[in-house]
Each structure stands twice: as structure tokens, then as C-alpha cells.
Image (cartoon, rainbow, N blue to C red):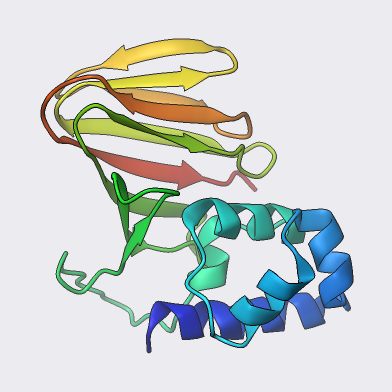
Length: 183
């Protein structure tokens, strides 16, 4: 099933579980009622920040909107993962593992083009983000400070605050992200 349809199904289920109208969800997520309606009908492929805003409004992990049925053992090939982009095509995210009732984290492979950046809104309260650099140099700008990471470096930070991934280099930046949601 394509990602837009999965998001549509999960959004409607999560919204109705909480007895929210589209208007109420619009107010708590900051996403227009018309956009929410399009997403819920499967007529839209929302950006990463749009999904984050909806997830934060519903108080669920980001990937809860992308949950599919998972088997006991799952192999995910990059060619099978769905690419999502930020506000521009310079930032690409591939989700490998979503948050589930038995897994309180999400795993992403991320690519950021040379001389570009991507701003991310804060995630849910108490969430933590773990980053591991595979290729290139990342400058992570957060409300708490800036961090420069190179190949093999790792960082964990409070991802409930806004943060921006910055690639000042002339080469592609590749890194892994784990979003962790403590119980």
C-alpha cells in the first residue's frame, strides 16, 4: 500500500479514536482543515513537517501515522523504503522502522545535499533524537546550542525543541536518526 493511503487510514483512525473533528485537529496541529481532509482522503502526500505537526497534535510518535502491519522478522531494503522530503528536495528521509506498541523508537536513513539545510519542528514531549554520521559533516543547530559531527560521531539531544540539520560541505551528508519515545 502506498504511503499516502497508509497515512490517510491511520490519521482517520487516530482522529476518530480521540473523538476529534477535523476542525479540532486543525486547531491543535496547526494544519488547515482542508489539508487534513485531503490527507485523510489519501489525496495528499504530506511533507515531513506536516506529519510532525499532526503527530504532535495527536500526541503520538511521528511514525504512528505511517504504521503498517509488521511481521515477526522484517528485512527492509533501501529500495523498498519510501522516500519522504522536507520542504525542499534537498533533504530526503527513508523510514526503516516505525514506532509500534512493542518498539518505542523510529529508525531513519537521511540524506542532505551539499550546501543545504532542513529545519525540523520540535517533536513530542520527552522525545530524544540519536544521530550517527555515516558520511560528511553535520552541523546541528538547536535552541540549546550548535553541534558539529563528523563521520563516526554520534549525538543524542532533546528533540522536543526545534532543530536544523545543516550541511556546509560540498558533498552529500548521510546519517542515521533514531527518534526515541520514553514511556
